Structures are given as C-alpha cells and as structure tokens.
Amino acid sequence: MDTRLIFKKISDCAQQLAMPVYAVGGYVRDQALGRESDEIDFVVVGDAMVFADQLKKCLGLKRVTRYARFGTFMARYGGYNLEFVNARSESYDFNSRNPVTKLASLNEDLARRDFTINTLAMDISDERFGQIIDIFNGLDDLKKGIVRTPLAPDKTFYDDPLRMMRAIRFATRFNFKIDDNTFNGIRKNAQRLKIVSPERVRDEFTKTISAAKPSIGMDLFDRSGLLEIFLPEAGVMKGVEQKKEYHHKDVFYHTLEVMDNVALKSDKPELRLAALFHDIGKPRTKRFVEGSGWTFHGHEVVGRRMSESILKRLKYSNETIRFVCKLVRQHLRPMTLVKDDVTDSAIRRLLFLAGSEFDDLILLCRADITSKNPKRVNKYLKNYDHLLEKIALVEERDRIRNFQPPVDGREIMTLFNTGPGKHIGRVKNFLEEAILDGRVEDDHDACVALIKSHMDELKDE
Image (cartoon, rainbow, N blue to C red; front, side):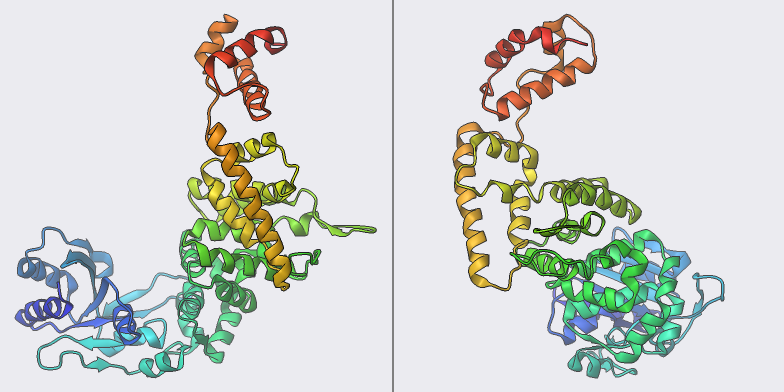
C-alpha cells in the first residue's frame, strides 16, 4: 500500500479525536537519505492507548499490540510495521535508569531523543503533509554526515548509556562522523555502560558489526573506551605482533580487516563474530621462539574456550555460540592442507569436522589473508582454489560431509551382547577414524565386518 494513503488514513483517524500524530525518527531520517523502510514510527500528542482503540476501528485492524506502561502500541498494516508512542518528557532519578515520564508536547518529545538525525518529525495532516519539523538542525547534520546529541552529551548518555553504542552504530551504518563534543561525551561516560543489561549491549553490538564495514564500529568502540567495558578481550589484541607473511603485524587491526573481508561476502552476523574471535586467543598464547619470532601455538584451542565464555556473557544463543566456536577451533586446519601431497584422509577429516559449516569456514580462511602485498594474497588464494578442487573430488566420491557411522548404538549393543556403556562411543569413534582414514568404506556391512575383526580390543576394559 502507498505510504501516502496510510498516512492519510491515520491522519483522518487522529482528527476524529483532535489528537495530532506525526511520523518521526528513523523513518523520516531514512526518507531524507533516500532509503526505503518498512517500519514507521509515530508520535501521538495525547493518549496513545485511546488512539489505539480508535485506529483499530478506523483501519479494521485485527490485532494491536499494546504496552500501556510505556504508552506504546504496534500494528501491522499495508505491508508496514507501525509503532505509536505518546509524546512524552522524561526525568531521571540519580540512582535509577528507569525514567519518570509524563505526557508532553511534540517539541519536548523530540528533545528527549538520542541524536539530531533522529529528532526529525513529519506532519501527516492534509493541510501540512510532508512538512518537516526540525528544531535541532537534524537535516543539516544528515547532509554533513554528523552524529550529534540534541542536548548536552552528558545528559543524553547519562540518561541512557546504550545511546553511546547507538552513536557508534549510526556512524558505522551511514559512514558518518561522530561530533567531537559527542564523542568526548562517550569517552567521559563509557563506564556507565556497565549498568546496561548484556542483552541490550549484545543487540546493539550485533547491529553495529552487521554494517557494510564493521571495522569502523570496532575502531570507534576501541577509541571511545566502550570496548574495554563490554569486550576487553578484543582490545588486548592491540599491539600484539605476529609474523607478517600474510597478516598485519598488529593482531587487532588484522582482525578488523578480516571482519571487513567477511562482510564483503556474507551478511551473517555470526560469521563476522567468528572473524572477530578467530585470533582472540593469540595474546594468551604469545611466545617468542629464537629463529622463528613470535608464535601462538594452540591459540585456536584457547580462542575457542574464550569465544564460548565471551558469547555466553553477552547472552548469545547456543546456536550462535556453537557456530562461532566451531569456526574458531578449525580456522587453521584448511591452511595446513594446501600442499600438493595432501592426503584424501586429511581432506575427509576436514569435511567431517567442518560439516555443514564447511563453506563458512573456507570463507573465513580466505578472509584471513590480509597481506598488503597483492602477489602474496593471490598466491594464497590460488592455494585455496587448488585445495577446493581436491576437496570437490573427494566429496563427490565419498560424500563424507555430515556423515554418520552406518552402525548405530543399538546394533553395537547387539553385536557385543551388552547394554548401554562407554564402549558404544568407543566403537563409533573407531568407525569414524577408520572411515576418515580410508581403512573401510562408509558401508554398513563393511563396518560390521571391521567391528567383528576387532571385537577383543573394542570390548570394555
């Protein structure tokens, strides 16, 4: 449905109650930037809950989701997500993040918002349709590409510390500059981020690294002092030297480039997280070996454990944690297989360990090549191309990816005339290794025959 028609219907409904309604915030901002959006926010100058009842009748809405405590309601109409909120002012108690709110004018409502580029409002009435209310020069900041608070940064960030992360998200998303006074306000109030829940921090962080160039946000998080608050393990990578064969000297800035490389190929936030954490274990495993320089033996193992701990702390889902930890643990393995004499057994093992994440693992490994020498980059990328050709041949022949041993636990118990026990896992592991090493085909009868020929050694000790 055309937005002009949606606005007219909402305006007509508002006039019946003599209750002005304006489109505000992100929708107006994105329209000014020439960006499309299927979400529209409105401010109701009056009681939004009363307007919710009226709008439900006017539009024939089947469902309206209300949050009366916050003076907010949401509805889906004409292909758009619509959200309405009372025009309100807010005041904060010194010891609480929970605001005391009261109904207010449109200008008071706009003043409480986070950044000038989000304080824009659009009149949707027939008489003044499309007129922009811009009391904080938000349009000018949009043209200049500036993120700036409408009020003093200290007040804006003290009231809601998550706005500091939002400033960086907008700067990253739009490639804007954060106003110097605003950025100094973030630095000054960075410690206050500690009172924000991990879930809110996680969501804002994920949105930031989901931008086209996540390194912008990561650099701003670091320079503002926020990274030290919610992800100190990443900041520790700064200044950690490593071999410069196909990496940057500094692990932190190498990591940022890997994230950008991944972003060029995939929109998956979890893959960008894997890029962020792939070398997170290097500071803890750094050792200097005479003749070799700095080494990081086992950093993929340490990194996997650290990734799990960090992601749990930030309340990421178990699925995301599993994905990231798997890629961090395996990210070195493909590079060890680029030699001409790589065996089919080694390739089968890689396919088995990577499973359904194989393509993402290879994408991460290719993104991990960040040398400033184009010839060197091309050399390593060609090595991966050659490896993928070999992998395709083995995969086509063996179908090893995501395979399961063809003999299950019940059959193993029957073969050994036993009940459940550790020997079942031992037999399954034995079969997996035999199949991956090419000592037996991935075939039921062949595997049963192999088990029978090793019955004595596979029995319980």
